[in-house]
Amino acid sequence: MTVKQAVKENKMISIILGVLASALMAWGIWVTDASYQTKYGGKLLEAQREMAVLKQDATMKVMCDDIFELKKSDGFLVSEIKDLRETGHQNYQEMLKILLNIQKHIKE
Image 1 (cartoon, rainbow, N blue to C red):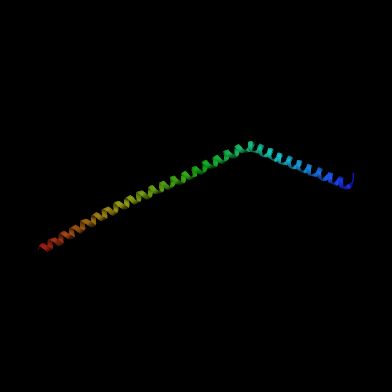
Image 2 (cartoon, rainbow, N blue to C red):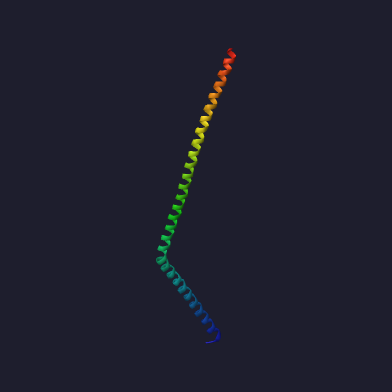
């Protein structure tokens, strides 16, 4: 066997061993990933569900706080509207009194 043949055969063996090593590493990664997914995947999904529930609860709390604030401002606005109605009614009565006085002066 010549030197060229030995180098050529070693290259082929190196390539075959490299491909086998790569395939073995890929298979190992695939198996490891699958085992971690089965072991920790359920825990991760449960944690994500809990986070979703907590976010939903926080959103609900904020919405309830907003509703209570709106109810407070609603009460304030209702009282302001009542005050404005009373003031408008009083102004209307005063205007009628003034008009009656003007009518009386015109008749005299």
